[in-house]
Structures are given as structure tokens and as C-alpha cells.
Image (cartoon, rainbow, N blue to C red; front, top):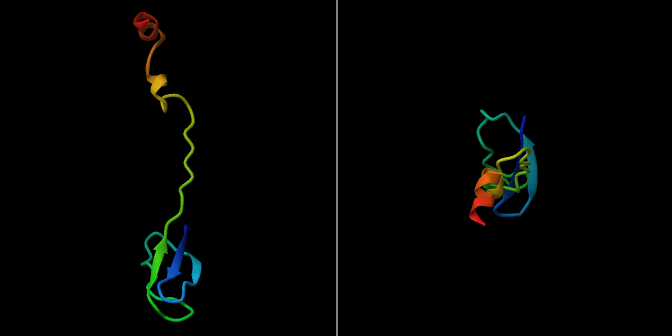
Length: 67
């Protein structure tokens, strides 16, 4: 199950919650019962293999004929 990060809008209390994808988002802070918002962080994406760079889609014959 994914872990979601939340932050309180009133007291700045930050916490994580393990929730199912189908569960509703949390709405109140466990410390002060004020509204909370989801915090979004960077996503770790790894591109493996060829085809992810501009030079990967070009063949050697096109590169040599252009010069």
C-alpha cells in the first residue's frame, strides 16, 4: 500500500499515512483537527534501455550522410 504525506494548514504538523489507493484522503490533522493538505515530493523514475535520448532515435546512416 502506498504511503501518503500530509501537512496541517494550521500547526504545520507533518505526518505520513499508509492508505489504500481506494481510501479517501485524510481531511483533518490528528494533532489539532484543522484541515490538512497532501504533500507531493519528487518521484523516482529510472529510464533503462535505448530510446530515451535524442541521439538514440537516429541511425548511423543518417548521421554520416549529414556530414
